[in-house]
Image (cartoon, rainbow, N blue to C red):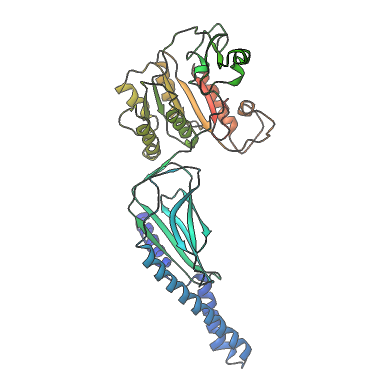
Length: 411
């Protein structure tokens, strides 16, 4: 019964898109016809009669202009290419080469545009001379085999409107936004080995030196040595325990996981895992060591949430690769995946390192990001839930890093 109702609703919606007269136009037309034929004529009110005829004429003109504009636009759009690049980036505005005429000869007509597939893309028409250029802003990662644009032609009074869709069979991939890296990341040369001695400081004593590398904190630079020798050297923690470096990483798909995907993309494109690593995202059938293929797995992991395959990457990684240490990107919202991550980490020689991505404005800007994570006052973002999740993961022996996507700060 529900399927039949859905089918009937879709058919009614499709028929309503091609009917040129809108509900306000229908009300205006019926009301004007009643006034002109039944009320004004019988009462010899010729002023009201003329106003009713003028309203009917306006409705007829708007409907005619909308129908003609739709026909011309449909004929032109069928020959236009999609004008889209192969890859778009989430949360980043991109001007495509797709454009529409501004219709200066028809000042009463407006043309609007949105995307039906993929639906998570915001579209804006930007005027450029005699054309309206398309500017798109994807909101989340996605992959599409076709792009469906929905065009709406309407008059400025809202009396007539027609909507139609045009499909372009072009492949499109939307990668997650790239996180900022203004802070040292968990896998960094400045951090020495993965773990320092448990009886010492969290990162050991800064007793060793080496050449400066990208991502090293500036307060570790030996400026006196630089002034004397013109060589950039930094202090680094002592190598207290020689645990193996991270050789595998995986992504857990879940609620609000876009920022964690952004952090995973940062690690892959900056090659922070080093050589010989493998990566696996939820929904993937096998791990990969190719950064581009790994990013494709991140994009496709959005389907894992729909199919209920959260944390499936842990099983794939464990069954096809000998894991000694692992970096796991998880959503900032707790879920059934947490118990599976805890079991997976307990089986490793070195407890897993957890990376959580977050974004958005931070209230009370005078506080540092690390303090915001564990604050107790209420806010629109569930910082308390994130703090509880972080605490529970750390109690299981795992190292947890929270990265703010826009600010690049860590907690």
